[in-house]
Length: 272
Image 1 (cartoon, rainbow, N blue to C red):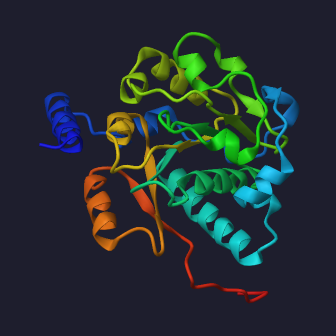
Image 2: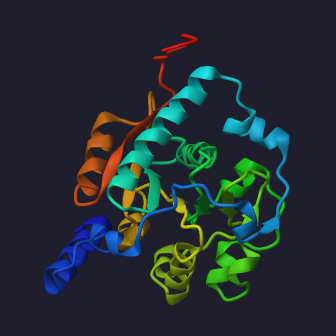
């Protein structure tokens, strides 16, 4: 039995014993993210972290992309995600893929930015790929502490959440990879971290940049704490069979859909 299969079997056994579903059961009780205007003066302020414009441009982060088709695609994705999450009272969204190089981190960043551009949405963006954290590098962030520092007791929450200069968006980066990632994800400190994010006012959508589903058990181990998922694939890189296997692994979770990166199909029309 593979590692992933073992995790799925263990989670199914736990759900059967307790009568509790994996992630949606507690979603309604936790409430929904705020989607109404909130005075910025009433919102907690986080420590500033400068970003490198050149890094943003190299990474093709939405703020530095002039491609109308790309911007439109993320706005459409934002609208669909907001609709599903609001409809189901969900607040956490995990972004995963099948393997490295498919663009899940960039998708997480650009979706978080697109969501924060909605004047009624507040967002946390978290680097939860503990073995291969890249979010801070993509943004060219300068910061002192990251998520691993919190999980190992070397920093507190207010020291790892940053304002990168985008209204309604706060970022939790990570610069210290750890091999025992699934153990950290299941730790009491991680539970405290997620609980603290969910307790923030105004209630925010939490975007989690997670590791690929087929390379470790991290996603499945942490799945009970995540309301919904997006699966990222890349045209010319993700094999159809691999994508089918990933969808099968995620079958019991709330998968909103598949995001296809590097698609050769484009819509460059100035309107519709």
